[in-house]
Image 1: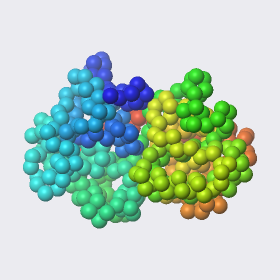
Image 2: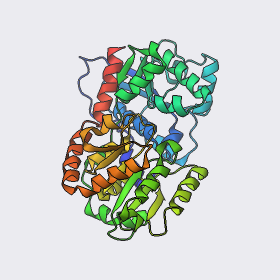
Image 3: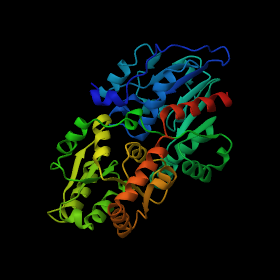
Image 4: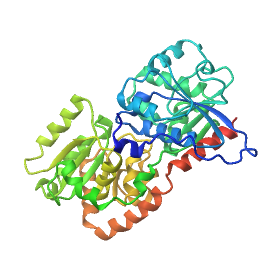
Amino acid sequence: MLTPRFRAAYHPPRRNAPRRNTMERRVIRVAWLYDMNACYAPTGVTRHALAQLERLAERPDVALNVVSGRITHPDGLAYWQGLGDVPRRQLPVRTRDLLRWWRASPLPPMEWLAGAADWVYCPAEFQVPTRRAKVAVTSHDVLQGFRFGSERLRRNTTSAFRKADLILSVSEFNTARLLEVVPDCEGKVAYVPNAAEDLFFAPTPAADRGRVRADLGLPDGLPYILSVANFQPRKNLIRLIRAAADLAEVASGELALVLLGSGAPEEERGLREAIAAIGPKAVVRLPGYRQAEALRAAYAEATALVFPSLCESFGIPAVEAMAQGTPVALADSTALPEIGGEAGWYFDPEDEEAIADALRDLLDQPDERARRAELGREIASRYRWQAANDRLVEALVERR
C-alpha cells in the first residue's frame, strides 16, 4: 500500500469538487493513458503524469477517463483504488506490451478501450492509434533519449512524435532539441513545464526538520550538501563525490554529502567505490529514495542542493529545493540554467575542479546564499502544477 508520505505528495484526485458553469466552454473529453506501475519510486515523468491526472480530474471543463495496462505493483494498485469514482479502465495486458503491439498494428484504436474522446493524452512519448480522437504526448527529455538511448528507442520516439497531433514539451531547451532531431514537428509543439508539488512551497515544520539527520544517517547538527537524483551515469554523481572531497570541510568530515536516490546494483557499486577512495573521514551517505515530507525536510536542512547532471531537460529537484529556500549549485548546460535562472551557482559538469570551485564560492558567501535563496523562491513560484495543467488544457482546446 502507499505510505502516508507518498499520498501526501500524490493524493488521488477528488472527483466530487463543485463544478462551475461550463456553458461558455464546451467540456473536452480526455482519455489519459499511462502505466500505473510507475507509481513506485516515481521519476520526474511519473510525477508529471500524476500531477496532471489529479488536476484534470478536478476540472469542470474536462471529462476524464483514465486508462492503464495491467497493474501489479502495490503502489500502483493502491493509487488506482484511491481514484474513487474517476472513470477508469485497467486493461488485461501490461502497458508496455500494448505499446509494443501498437507499433506493429493500428488495432485496437484507443476508443475501443476508453470510449469516445476528443483527445488521447499520454504524459510520455507513447504511440497510440485512434479512430477520430487526436493524440497529445509529453516530451520529457529528447537529449537523453537521443544521446544515451538505443537506436530502437530513438526510432520509436521519433515515430510517436511524428504521429502525434500535439507535443507538450517540458522546457524551451527540450523543445529546441526536439526540433533539431524531428524538424517536421515544428508547429505542433506547446510549452507545458514540469513543476513542484504544492507541498514543497509550504514551510517545513520544526519537528520534521529535527528528524532529518537521523533519517539520513547523519550525526546531530552536521551540515550537509544534498543531491537528489537516480544513480544513472548521466547524473554524474561520481564526479560530484570526487569534487566534494576536494573541499576541506568534506574531507575532514565537517560537512557531509548526501545522495538521495537509487539505482541498479552496478550503478550503486560505482558510487560506493568512489566514496571508498576519498578517505576515511569524509561522511557520504546513500540513504535511498525519499519523498513528500521527508524529502521536503531534507531540502530545508541542506546547506545546498548540487545537481551536476550531464543531461537534463528540466530538473524538478532544483525547483523543489528553491521552493524551500535552499541554494542550488547546477550544471551550466542543458535545461538547468533555464530553470535556475539567476538563483543558481553554475559549473561545467565535466570538470571536477569547476564543481568544487562553485561549491567553494557558495559556501564562502553566506549573504549571497541568502540573497539567491530568496530569488530562488520567486523563480520556483513560476513552476506550479496548476499553472502547468492550465497550459495543458489550453493547448488541447486551441488545437481541438
